[in-house]
Image (cartoon, rainbow, N blue to C red; front, side, top):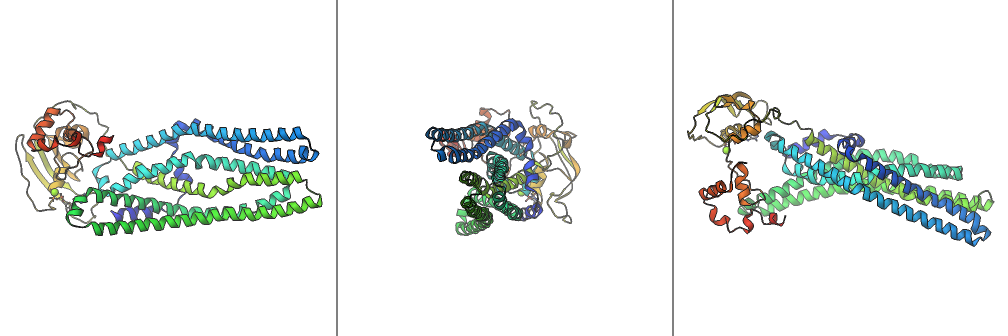
Amino acid sequence: MSNLTVQMRSDAGPRSAVRSLLRLWPYVRQVRVRLFLACLLATIASCLGLVMPLVLKWLVDGPLTSGDLSGIWLGGLVLVLLGATEAGIFGVRRWLTARPLADVEASMRESLYGRLQRLPSAFHDRWSSGQLLSRGTADLGQVHAFLAQPLTFLVVNAVTFVAGCVILLEQQWVLGLVLLVPVVPLTVLCSWFQARHVLASRRAQDLEGDLTTLVEESIRGIRVIKGFGRHRSQARAFEKMVFEVRGVELHRARLLASLSGMFVLLPEIAMGTTLALGVVQVADGTLAAGTLVAFLATVLVLRPVVESTGPLLAMCNQAATAVDRYCEIMDEPLPTQDHLPDVGLSAPPRPAALAFENVHFQYPNASMDAPGVLRGVDLRIEPGETMALVGSTGSGKTTLVGLVPRLYEPTAGRITLDGQDIADLPRSQLRTMVAVAFEDPALFSASVMENVLMGGEAATETDGAWALRVAQADGFVHLLPSGRTRRWASRG
Ligand SMILES: Nc1ncnc2c1ncn2[C@@H]1O[C@H](COP(=O)(O)OP(=O)(O)O)[C@@H](O)[C@H]1O
Ligand SMILES: [Mg+2]
């Protein structure tokens, strides 16, 4: 299985985060109006912050210089109102987006689950459970986080930044230009960061999938691990993987720290320079004190906008990786012919003759030159007939049985039920006609009765009780808490 994840990782390569994120559109479409409104409100609120320095300038150059007390009170009141409005708008934004975003996550999760149920057994042979689980949980969480924050705030911040720069340049263009110098090196740094962080995100999220697999298999196989006293080696394997995850996470953190550090350092240097230049100009009498105050206050409003760029970009990359990983499942082709109309679903199963006619089979993931597992099987089983298929391990018994409910499709030849090729039957109909008892029992987190009745939609509780009696399980089953196979399941 690790071969597979390695192969997927090398396929991943560097690609545009924007292109990946655009694939969210079909899911986001339904909530686009609310998202747009929320983004608009946040932009307005953020730009209101830029009005405060202008009020400050008016206060310093006007009422404060002339000692007009009522003017000072008015200015103070306007500042308080601006602050309260900004806070209120941000609150409304949150209220606007909470439900639609939860809906988007739910619908993406539902689509993924539906897809996983319909994808063929050959797909599930190739993918480890942890890689699938982590896509449905952690990755979708990243997508939700992206829609809730970076999607809005990258737009809000860009608009606020441009508006702020216009105000700065308009107040004192020389100081404004000095302040904008860091934009050039920071842009270069961003592309350096993007190239590396996207790869690190992919690796971290793939590893998280591997870790989930390890945990899931250890819990599922706990009896084997205990029975063979393998808990130490299992713990060592876990520790090794945990450290690998830790290493990748640290690498990712270092990249972000470098970027964020520069996003603080360079603007601070530019700010210090403009402050010194501004003070000299005020001393020379070429610049009004109020203008310098307003200039610096505007810079302070823009500071968090600029500093948040690093973390927002990092969240975008993680979300882009999550979308890629999600789409890898959604792009997997579904089995063909499932669109055939379902007929006679309600017809009770009846005995039928089962025949294999020159059936060949090879697993899709087997090497090209390997001989087929089944090579020219001819077999006929009449209604009511019982057949034992005997052979050494690996001779293909389980494979042969798996072809009957079409868990896999024969590579050549055909299988018929009463002369009808099962390839022409919709899978759902075929599976009401044949039933398979597998060697490895799978218990679902439900009541024992629900587990027993899993095999047939039409089966009643009486049938279930009969099956339990035959399996000699009716005694202990009644002693289980609420008759459930897993205690936690009863907590709902
Ligand atoms: N999911 C699979 N993918 C690839 N090869 C498989 C898979 N399952 C079984 N095989 C291979 O097919 C052959 C037949 O296996 P199987 O049908 O399980 O044998 P049996 O049930 O007779 O022990 C073996 O060589 C086995 O390695
Ligand atoms: Mg077998």
